[in-house]
Length: 233
Image: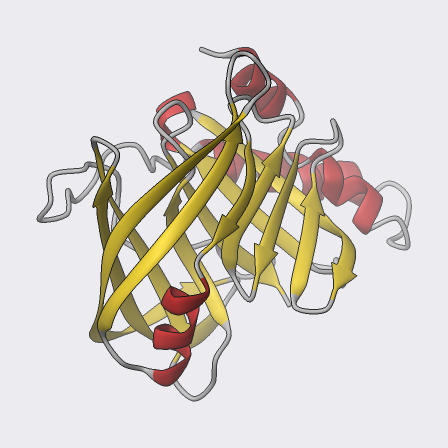
């Protein structure tokens, strides 16, 4: 397992303790421990394989009612199946439509309207991502062609630019069950290829709006897919 994966597992749900600091003392450790055990049982590395054969799970993640009782600040669940790593992240910044999320060891993810656009301290980090066309198609509820651009640092610290041709397709209506709530969503699939790579991103966008509750997004050949679920809005 990679160092980053070990750090995530070791700090599993540690950020919940910070976010729920207003909860009564004595109750919090038990709740954090319980939630950590729940997350540890999530098996997102197996499950249904998508038709492109990329592996991973296409099924929504579900946490039971009361798993985050007393926590009111925004919480994001992240799972990296290839590293067997699970963590929760707290939101530490908002700049326009970009939200920055962090674990307690300062591993951060940046999401632009739910689309992963940068990572830090994860290893083989994404410096920036341009997937604006993909997001526009998802917002409009339509399919179509899109191009996404990934920028990352090479071994000599030079910026590597990778361009991928993608096709976005609307999928069926699906209901996410999490924390005792039912969230009606519509599934969107983004299939991309280029630079010798093929990958599939999946997004669950709320049916009556534009919010992405859950996604499975490719972060590069070394990291693989990151499954993200917004637990608390």
